Length: 105
Ligand SMILES: [Zn+2]
Image (cartoon, rainbow, N blue to C red; front, side):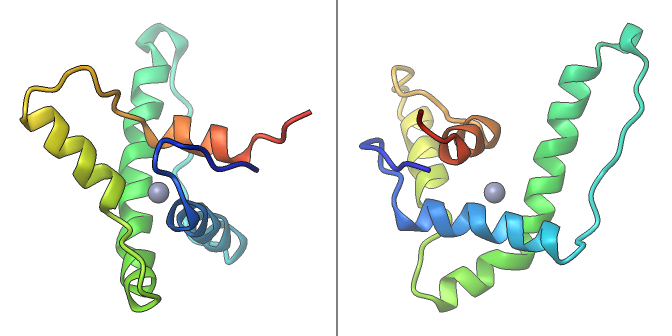
């Protein structure tokens, strides 16, 4: 795992660990069997967004009691978008998870 200069810090790490904790504890997940003719990737992406949002409802309050601000990155991205700063990239949760959980070799 690595953290980088894009503003990801221990809050981001704790966030991803909470997702893993819920999975380890058996929190329900979506399962899909979508016909390839229906272009399943966008549908799976939406399902992931919904699933993540539900999980956030579970652990964000606990993160806040730890003194962390779980919404900071998303809030900053939203503020950039609303200000018309299209140069700032919106990092999807999938990209974030992939980057955070990748092991450098
Ligand atoms: Zn998340």
